[in-house]
Image (cartoon, rainbow, N blue to C red; front, side, top):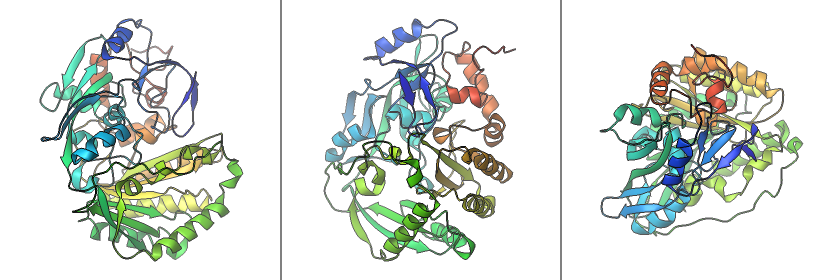
Length: 444
């Protein structure tokens, strides 16, 4: 069957295996031949080819609740459980994940494999900082319990390891107690990039902070934006919500997304949010997961799909690097509806985890031939400024660029070769960035 990531590029003709239990998953791995390889796939929300291979093991049916201790907030669940399924059960109990992604469609196993971060990394770190343990199915069919205390090396390689160390079967995660899931929020408009960065720092005491950037603005308005800040409200309902909005029924004509339609959208968005000065109370669903309201929104980019480009720049070079990135993208006329800027906090011990001290910018580009040379140019800017790329969003990164951004790649590869010497677990992405050998190649 044809499989693809959320960006709808690339596509691969794959054999999809969906075990209904951990024992079935174990039997599947044990039946693999020495030349066979596969990769785990959660809910299909990574954007590129990190969960694509000619054989894919889906965790969709491993979505059971094993236990939820409402006093301690400890959840034990299958790796295929999504944040949406989790919230339906946890919110009425006054429990909420400490870190959530930008969509509630992500699975728990996928959140661990990519070590997701949210709008609160500057205060609370990434998702794996709240993972107590997980069961990892290795290439030899053995299962290991991994945690910061047991099998620590394997734990820190798997968290953010893009599924290359094994199959996550289940996990134990710490949830936090909340008295309300309403969000007290406000919006702050900024005039240019320097002002945006300055305000991100000033608003750092808020729990949740994220900026939308007008990436088509130029000159003195370059980097202008709207910063959205929020904190849990002290009182309010503990009620699960899922706002139902329109669905995009088919792939839209790609020509509708162009420099002029994006400029119109950006101007309207700035005008609307310039008026939003006072604090407001909104439901958690609209604050954390605004795009989930539009079902199949990825179809807006047309049949050819799109590429999301997310990078991290260290604080000391962030302003100069971001200015160069935005100027280059704007001059190429490759604007983005979803231009998101966040300040991140300290790194954790996970070998390939993306977040670290600095600013992260995420841009969406409609897939067309002219965008690939632009992205190569942006790559050079990122590396020249000491940055790196988020593997969960990547679909075309060059091996040398990946290795420049992740200096611990040798440590990761050595551990992977130790626990998976036959490359049972690999993906299109891992072949492309040099973490696994391409099929048919000879390794020394």
